[in-house]
Image (cartoon, rainbow, N blue to C red):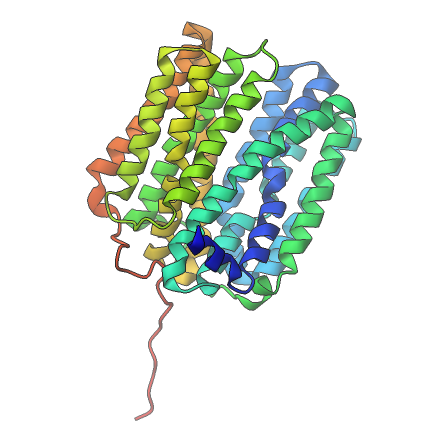
Length: 401
């Protein structure tokens, strides 16, 4: 923990971490709030699912696009424009009654305009700390983001059930504006300028580490989506158990990230960390008892933040600085699609064989990710004795004769 104290004493690091976590806090509330609101207005979970799907598609499309635009127009401009549009779209969805197709269009706009805070902050990090501190910083970031998934769903569910779904959406708007403004006005956001990428959109995916980070992120987060569906199906009539079990999963990730954040990242690091997650998720299939699920998900969670830290570090170390934001955008899009795929597969299996099917899907997604990490181990960079910062942007220099 002494290393983290040293890290947080680095000028600006604590402030930027707090600001970006606040700015991203709505990410843990928006989907659930939209689902509750549309179901309340229409009386149909099917309609709510359509609007939520449109929002997710918008987010998936926007990830690499808005991240790349930060290199063209600057971080502050892109973050501000998307923040304004997203806040206006959420307010419209909350206050204006509309048919489901129109709600889907507004939901898609919410997704398309989600501020690319995650891509921005992970592009800034290498400019804030030295190379020795960068890997622990990625791990700390991956660990602390679990706070979002522990607190945000509980908070928004409480507001929606006690005050209504309209106030719940408006609370998200307030946090979105406040947290977004705090992050945008941070001095580091103004100081760091992303060079314009000279390569076409999507070319960054031709780099094996970026493709591996995107693919494994898809499979790892797909397992999370399946777990969430399984836990909800298991305790649908059990009160607080579902929320508590999912919170234990996140607490395991938080503990794992803080404990193993300083571990050097070699080519086999991803496989070892995914193995912990895979073992825990495989054990969930043996019992639906709340204590068993809590214990096995706590074990699985220990490997989650460390695995995400590898994804962030390998992405950063494998691309030029001008490509970092877009690369993180693609990684984020892979994770969004993975969450949707995991939830969908788990849903079909729950209907067919019961909640155990969801845990089978979660384990299968993670085991497949582990197989990818083992088979393509040569594609993972060895960062044990190497600076994980992005590669410098260079261009020919013409010297006078």
